[in-house]
Length: 258
Image (cartoon, rainbow, N blue to C red):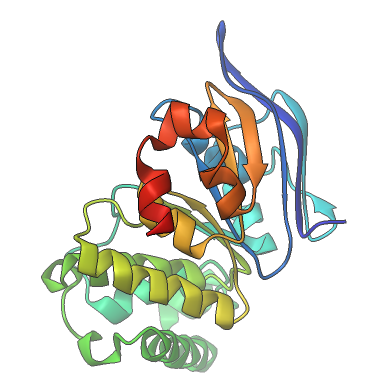
């Protein structure tokens, strides 16, 4: 069984079928991309994977256990976390504090401990701070730990959002358009960053419009059109798929080969 196995999932909003009988799988340690035009249903799929939307039909199995229609917090606790197309950092909090938010999905202490700042509370908080700093070191942001999130360059804000997802103890990270708004240099740095995540043992699912990112980083690619899968395969197979080229990629095939 695959690490993540999505079987025939469907989502309806009234009479509109946003995701129609979609199946895909992800093996542990892979980087898998889901591509398609705006409105194709990609973010809806992410919302179904993370419990934001309930599925109407189908099944989602992660690490051998069904997770569909569970509450978002339960899915995070199972080991799945995500970022968003629009960066959602706490701008008025410091970098390390943003990462600490991710660690608090699992507190380990009671309301009493928190209210009265018991030794147990202080010990666990110290451990979380050490963990947050280690994560920042692993992504090259340790020297910015005391800066406010709003003062980071755009590319580093993206990294910080991913760091917060990592801090939940995620094993599978869902990245929703991480290269959105980036210049070519920032996109190239993002490529190396995501490769580094794979090297650290994380599994990644990517929604992305930047085909230079998708083609250069993906182990496999799924293409969605109007909520339905139309193609899947290795990057070179997708780049040479006539239906995909005509519908989505246009001249990207040439760029991917250059």
